[in-house]
Length: 108
Image: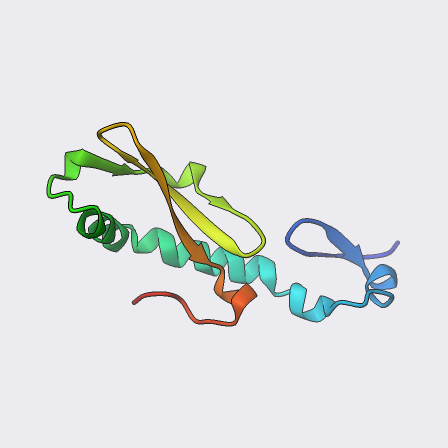
């Protein structure tokens, strides 16, 4: 039986990995890096709320809502957090995924 390793969106066996042109060893780190980054963002939700209030010039906490982590989204290069403003507008806060762009975490 061939063992498989977990990538972000699929599993891969050694037999398939050795024929790939991309760096599979590097990609094997992505699931754990994604988990660490998600946790980092989750623990800094109050800071995110402060940033939202400051940049939208909203002084009342009831004027906006940073959406629940269950509906946060991510793609290959970005992580997005939906925000709903009291006037009905919706926006996204976008963070580049540090393990995909080679940076450290964006804040404290």
